[in-house]
Structures are given as structure tokens and as C-alpha cells.
Image 1 (cartoon, rainbow, N blue to C red):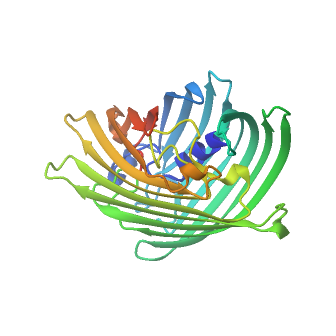
Image 2: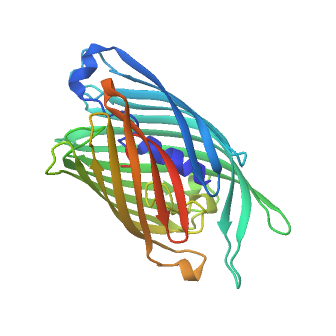
Image 3: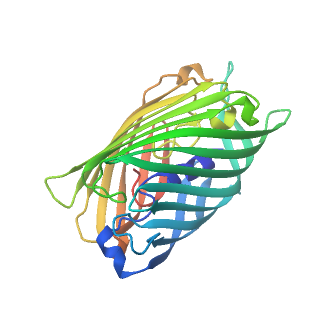
Length: 349
């Protein structure tokens, strides 16, 4: 379910929604905003909805932890895809503990590229419920270790000549490590962030077949010669091992890489590199330019396996909430024979 992948990327991204300096948060016990969501891609077509969010201190006496975020999200698309979820990203006890909680449900009308002598797109529908809990504990300067649990239940219906339906339940237990050297968790202007995530889907946990997934993310931020601008670099690798089920295959889209929206490139592994320049020409307005390269491996389409996939695009940013320095904006990106439009809350990474 590609729409679920988009949601999880949104939740696990440290740039989730706000870019607020910590010292300003003492002025308000809670800051509540409702952000409209409008976007378009070639699979889900027009997407619209709302994201009400609250930023607050988990403990008002805690002057070290970044503000926490909780919110709801509801989105509907013109191809009749929909989903709803609730989420929280919590910073606790002087940033010694970090926790992510999310739960939701939805139904996606999507497509994938089939293999065989002639490749063609096959429509499919996926209903999904999910729950995620991740807890990290600080063990050193900028170093966190922790674990997570992920439950997803999929009901797939594939529109072959003879329709095929299946129900898949996945239970994953993971180990996570974070090395966080950013100067701000919401809008870093310098520093770096390294994430390692290993998730096991074992048979003893109720999975039909055993598989696992390794994700590596490295983000690096540099102040430009113009002090208000930022250069952001990102490397990403995802590696599925074992009998990876259809819904856990890695799809090229979203954060890595923008400009792909048809679900054509799907496989067990993905590697991608990209860079972004964040140009702030006014206090409340800015532009971004980005480009990247990636490749998917373990694809059922031989011609797609290892193919170099370019991505390039531009975006506009507007500081809709100056008191929180939170940007919203629009990205337009092009890939290889594909393209997409992305409404952003915060930055891509």
C-alpha cells in the first residue's frame, strides 16, 4: 500500500511539520494549527484533506527537550483512495527519551507494473489498518538506541483477468539507532543525522513467511554563504531480505526519490542520493531546488533492476506560521518518464 508508505515517511521524518526554535516555546503552553493538504500524482490523482496538529512541551518544566507534536490526518483523493490516522512525536525528560506513536486505517486504489513477456500496469485495491510504536533512549551525546513494533493488516484485491484477493497480516519487531548531531530537530541549518533501523518479520510472530528489512538514512546540513540559506544532502538505502511480501516491497516515490508516482519501480532494495538547496529570499518566503539519483534492485521487471533513476525539481515555501517558523509549500518534480506534484508540510528531509 503505497499511501501507507507515504504516511510512515511523514511520521518518521524529524522535519514533520514545525520548524520552531526551542527558546520560543515557553511563550505558549500549546500551539494548535490546522493545515490544509492539497496534492496530485498520476496514481491517486488530486489529493485533499486536513492535518490538525498541536505543538507543546511534554513537561512544561523541561527546558531542554524540543517541543512534542500530536495530530490527526485525513485525506481523500479523486480516485477514491482515503486514509485517516493519529500520531504523536514525543520528546521526554530533557530529551533522554524519544517516542513515536501512530495508528490509522485506509483504503488505496493503486497500481503496479507486472512482469512477464509484456509488462503492463495492474490495478489493485488495498485496505489497511496499522499501528506503530517506537521508543528511543539516549545513551550518549546525540546517540539513541531503541526498538519499535509495527502491525499492519492488508486486504488486497488485484484486478487480473481473474481477480485475486488476499489478506496479509504483518508483525514487525525492530532495533533502531540514531546519531543526531543537528543543531535543531525541526529545521536544522548545520550538523548531521544518521538512522539505522532493522525490522524482523518472524514466523513465530504470526507472519506467513519470514523476512526482514534494513534501512539506513544519512542527512547532512550545511549553512550556505548566505546565512539564511541551507544546503541539505541525503543518502538512503533500504534492503529487504528473505520472502518479502508484496506490501513490504520498496517503491520509488516520495522522499526518495520525488518525481515518481506511478508505482513502476518496485523491488526489494533501493539506494538513493539527493541534494537540496533551500533559498530564503524573504523572511516568510523561499524556494528550493533539488536533484538526485537512485536505483531499485530485486525487481520483478528485469529491465528495471538496477536502472539509474534521476530526479529533479523545484519548490516554493511560505512561512504560514511565523511564530513557529513553519513552512508549507509545493514541489514539482520530474523523474524518468514520470512526474508528480507534492504539497509539503515542513521539508522533505
